[in-house]
Image (tube, rainbow, N blue to C red; front, side, top):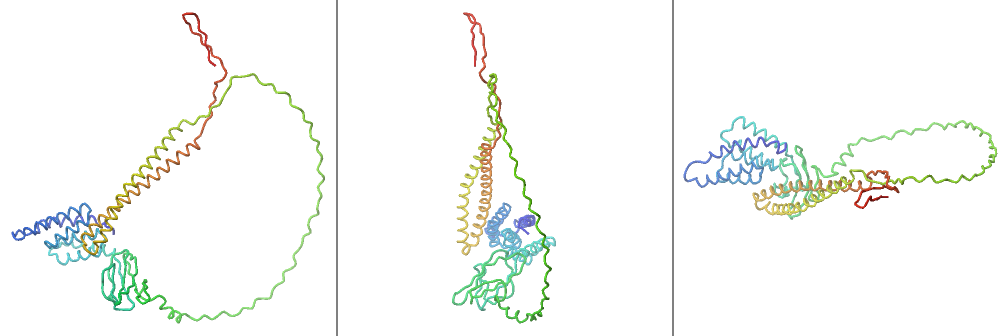
Length: 402
């Protein structure tokens, strides 16, 4: 189940816990400072969660729980971990709430147990073996014990880095991508410096499988039957050759000179003019506008996106730096980096659309220039005389045009 599918459950739970959290602070005068700090942190967490700032909401709820521990805040912390794609931590806080809460209605318990079951579907089961034993085992850089480890453990689905270290600080690593709902065994062999999927070394069972293979008796030799001589082929004699008669001699006709051509009587000169179809100018202008708009959008969005990429790299570097030093600050940088990554991907999509639009406009313009249909329009302009007579003060004015 995706985090979006659990949003209704989270909003219901947060609204429930928010109403309880405002009344959870006792009225004693000695606890006024802690009560005010816890109330402010709690309200800030509810506000950040409603705005989908899950990393900031988690920090606020954890601060409120440290100042004034209350079972109801556990539900909000679990919801934040669930929204941050950390189902293992979410399950732990949900179970702590069901164990520590004094008053849980049957409806609330059923709702939370259903959420826990959905979160477990997003986990994978991992079993780790080492060769030899007594090696320190690390999962994603965190120590999880000394081999041999007891049974399988639940881990979040996705890529993980497994490592085994010996007493002399030699190590072997293996990267595995775990699918949700599946069980995987991984062996880390420090002797050969190899890691692989499975609980036995590669090729360890080849000899046992060869011993269990049934013996195969070769088939008896089969004597082929005697060759059969085919009957002689019947040869059909070729048809007799017929010599064609010699070609007849044809005397060419006598050429007669054609009569002299008499030029026809001159008529008004008729010329043909080539014109583009009526929509040619509009097509060229439209293609140029689409090309300029697409190129402008692609260039502008790309330049704008470079700023977001630079900020994303800063958040990623800050997350790597604080991941092992300050978990709260690392989660905050992680959330901001994910938001920047979403905007970067959106800008890349817009730039791609601009490039496609500009390419379509350029292709349309070039195609209009090369392939737009033309039409030939006859014109009767030629050697013709038009006379115009106009009265003047001195008589009549005779004029004309050719």
